[in-house]
Image (cartoon, rainbow, N blue to C red; front, side, top):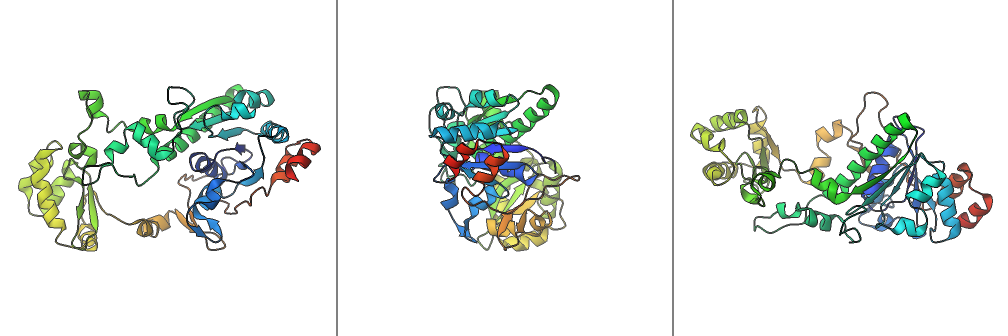
Length: 381
């Protein structure tokens, strides 16, 4: 697989770091999960199946677990010795914590100049918010994206996805792979400073028009990406379900409005987003309300229009398209897993579904790394 032979030391908890290191494990990396004595918190968070947290299963498969108390001299020494044999080091503590623990970049680099060391934090390692605690929702609030996620009442709603966590995760993964590639040319490692806020805001080029062009905040209901277009909106159907139109190109507008015998609305539908779209929206609201969601799925099946039924999460994961792409699969014990989205023709990923017990691999991993026997005895017994 693509990352065979790569060793990753992962101190991160919860979602951003564990997701990126699981992606690496799915493609052959040896990921060493370093857990505190209390364990990774998501081992005990949320719904359970097969005796394990679903969240833990879908962020920690294929990893090895060691337990180290980094507040002890032996724990710190064991981690530094392990890091001397690693390629990548990932941490996601609040800025300053790893330095206080004695396992920051400079300490690890002193043992291993080639290390690629990635720090993931809410606001990165610099700036006035550097010490501010924040998980995904607060980061979205600071980033402006929460202000775009409005309900029918015009009030911000809890987002459906932890996009700050996951953009931070994927940007960190990209940076790590860039640094590893550069290391093949220079032999030098690097330090990576990932801000989840930076990552999230970097993914907004299509919605910053009002801010950059007109020096104002978006009027959400009138903007192209948030329902300002009739052909980029969600509609209720006769059975209380919903469908979505997701393409404003002329060819889609022309095809649908002619099929619905309303070519007179084409000009308005192709106009700018905002109030001018109102007559088209009213027509489509009444039209979609006349049939069930699945009736519309059948009706659109031969139409070249950007259309989709609004599936609930259970429907989505059990849909034929998802099955065909192996984005949902069962392990040998029947437990469900989210598949890997990184698809290669050569050396495809092969997720290993075994989950590590807390500290299961402490002694083996430290012995492989050549850690002093006395240190191993102190941390592993």
